Amino acid sequence: MRTKVVAGNWKMNKTIGEATALTTELLLLYQAEVKNNAQVILCVPFPFLGATSTQVKGSPLKVGAQNCSEHESGAYTGEVSAGMLKSLEIPFVILGHSERRQYFGEHGALLAKKIDSALAHGLVPIFCCGEPLEIREKGTHEALVKQQVQEALFHLSAEIVTKIVIAYEPVWAIGTGKTATTQQAQDMHAVIRKELAAKYGNNVAQIIPILYGGSVKPDNARELFACPDVDGGLVGGASLKARDFIEIIKGAG
Ligand code: PGA
Image (cartoon, rainbow, N blue to C red; front, side, top):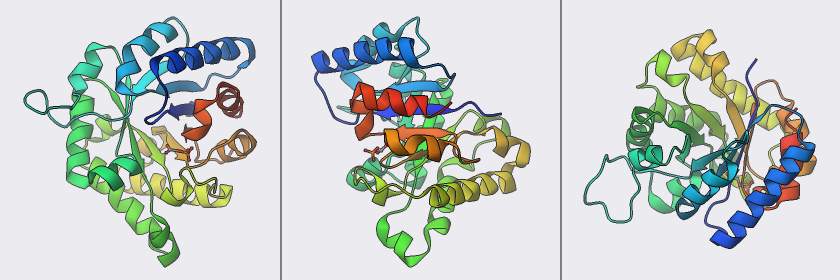
């Protein structure tokens, strides 16, 4: 059975003081209330990675970054490499989030390179895919998501692809309060898993966690995470409030 994963994506929110306070509260609530063994990941802004890692050390919580460069090192002002993240002992990195795709033009070949760089440094990429509203309305969402997965991941060997976490995030559900129905989520997760099985075989496809993202909240998390192909969630807004995030984590067990 796949372990459930609940990742919080803080995006570009909070100051260091607020981040420290949120993590402190999360750790207290986690220790007091969470009984399941879901893998919890806090994907915090770059400047907080060191401090948050120090805070969660010795607890089951892990830290992730929200992006990394495709380059190893060099004259790329403002960028952060996978090697730098590794040197901070950061185990996870979100890649291909729809906001990176939309505002920073990150797509197929570039994302494949970022995935390679993360994997080369032993980081686990949380690779995001998902369709915008107009594609959903046109009915071509399955084709687009399959293409996103193929472009970024299908150059990997069967052995390496098992190190990836996938997050399906329909763009129309991100930050909108409009969650995909459990049926919509399960259907798309099954499509993604079938696509992985067609390329890598069913054994490999069964190992890869596929998270749902897009307005996951305390009151819908349990139902979403109970779908057979939904292995947890990537949570934006609700991960910024300790009580909400803890309730979502509790929904994973
Ligand atoms: P949301 O964001 O939970 O605020 O919809 C999810 C995400 O963008 O990862």
